Amino acid sequence: MKVAFTSRGNSLDSEFDERFGRAMYFIVYDTETNQSEALENMAGVESAHGAGISAAKKLVDAKVEALVTGNCGPNAFNVLSGNGIKIYISDSKTVREALEEFKEGKLQTLSSPTKGGHWR
Amino acid sequence: MTIAVASGKGGTGKTTIATNLALVAAERYGYVTLLDCDVEEPNSHIFIKGQKVKEEVVNVKVPEVDESVCIECGACSDFCQYNAIVSLKGKPVVFKEMCHSCGGCSLVCQPKAIHEVDHRIGMINFYSAGKINLIYGLLDVGSPLSPPLISTVKKYESKNALNIIDAPPGTSCPVIEAIKDADFVILATEPTPFGLNDLILAVEVSRKLNKKFAVAINRVGSGDDRVHKYCKEENILIILEIPDDRKIAELYSNGKTIFENLPEYRKSFEEALTKIDGVIQNG
Image (cartoon, rainbow over all chains, first blue to last red; front, side, top):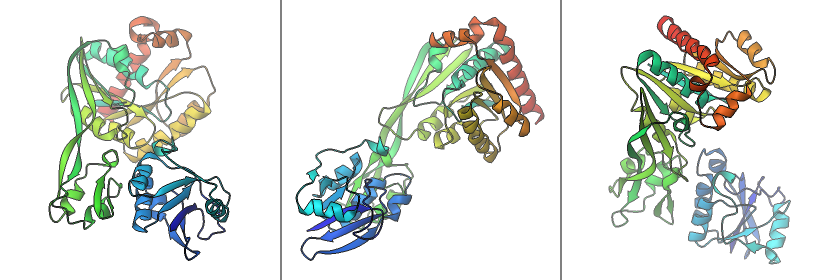
């Protein structure tokens, strides 16, 4: 299974980003091969509107099945959950910490958006 | 002729200035149109009380996809810069509230699976208050895009009489839409650090739009003289000063105008309108 983590950098040791749509990178970890790759999210960072929607599309296109992030707005939530991507919430400092928490089953899944639109 | 009352900072007196100037203009010219373009929180109608004449629903165009014709090519999704139409596992999904109604998705759709439909964003209310014709836009709750509604309110500007626009605060798209066609812009501010900071931004916007503009300072006597100093340094005309007077605040909180209730301040509004007239006529 592929799991995406929101990140400020391009590796497992990068700082975990609590934002979803405007996270600089998604670190996509494959639980079968234990390999990870970085997906950059410049389109999301630079978009004036709909950053969450475009980020969610990126994960749907990458065939990710789970997401670990800090927050998720309503549009992103609808796209992700509507396409079968489970959302887990973490407040880890690094992506590696979030990954360990995920592997240990310590993270809660999200059943509704954590924020309104525009981070409100 | 159109005068827009704008401000960088909110709560600096746009509505106070717009409504009182409208009363001066109505008395002087016999007729004036007051357009409240602060569509997220219009409040001119609280001060200018009139009879409702009519209302109009305002819609924008948003795409609708006929899935039986769609070939799942993703051209619409690639084209949209606002992520308002997004291909998910091939199927285009529309996010109406993100849409800027450019129509691009329907143009790039080869099989013509996309057509545009109406999506309501708000309404316009028309009031008649003696010599004042009051028109105000009201954005629907949950609708994030106000410029199309502001632009529709502006369509009702009078062609041969004076219009006064009560603009939204700030310096972003809604403000640009409200002031871009005005002949003169009044920038309301207060003599405080916040007032000056946001005035400077509003001045930059007005200069970029090549607008004739002047500053109105509200609550003069509170705060300090930094706004006055800035205007002097920048050679910006101060067209109106409203003193920090508790009586004015009390009137405002009761939905009453300065013009109708505090005759001692009438003159300053009358002079402001005369000065604007002069600037518009003589450049």
